[in-house]
Image 1 (tube, one colour):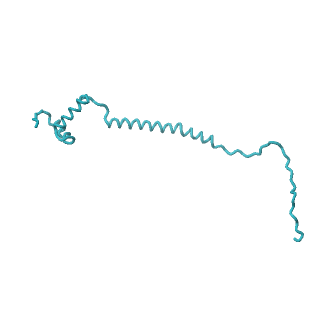
Image 2 (image 1 turned 180 degrees about the vertical axis):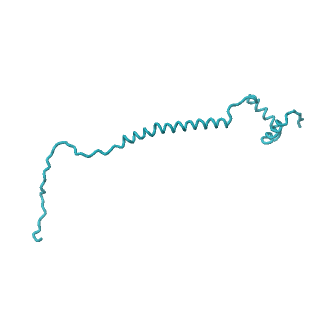
Image 3 (image 1 turned 180 degrees about the horizontal axis):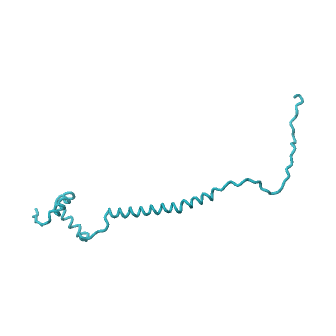
Length: 123
């Protein structure tokens, strides 16, 4: 069994570490070793800011999505609907009045039928 050593840490920080260690690790020693290994393996400093967090990224995405929605609504309002109305007006033509084509003038002759019904004298 390894021997233990005492390290002086402020109570507030020690309580935070103990609660963190209990939720994620079996022992405080394992927690501290894992934290140190993480910083050494990734070659970063604990004081270094790694970049935006999930919450800040979510806010940025929401703002950008809202801006995109506003742009699309503006496009629909100012470009798509008027253009669509113009296209509909072009394709909705009234039926032209039907006038006979004048190719050549023909005189209409009444044609006499060649056959007639027989008239029954009995009636």
